[in-house]
Length: 187
Image 1 (cartoon, rainbow, N blue to C red):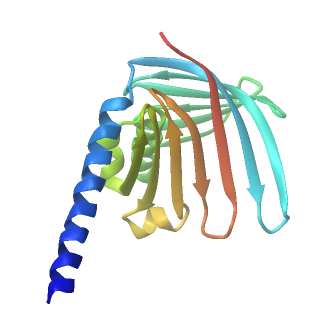
Image 2 (cartoon, helix red, strand yellow):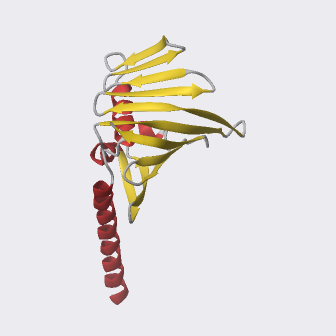
Image 3 (cartoon, helix red, strand yellow):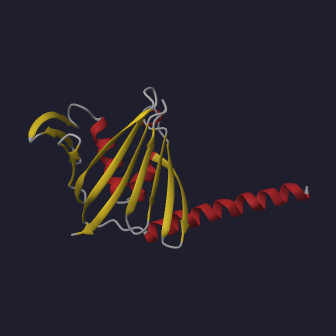
């Protein structure tokens, strides 16, 4: 009986500690109105056992638009708004998706906007968030709550300080995408 009570107390303390870390995470991260920076992206393809590298820059305007401009190895731009996803190559639009023809665009937009500026209340709608905070540095592991999201993202890890510095997307088939952010400027 004593072991059971001790187990329950330890379990409740661990839940309390988790809640405090998520609450602390919300206080140490910033969700600015405008943010620009550069990125380096590595995409690991498990079936080919190879990685593809790309670099570029991004421009974020809170709740309005994210422009993700890949400069190398191919010049391409993804323009994301709450209702549309536009792809450009060499300045020419090659693809357009919107919420009227593809409802998943709204979900992807929510997730991408939430990740880019640590909007935890949005991310908590789609993921179980496990947070660790040490001083000003933090790490969050996101596990999808929805099977549809889980079919293309197995897990997401986010790391940073005031701003997001790294994202790793783990896909169910073993592929993963790792992104590092640099030269972040709140405009």
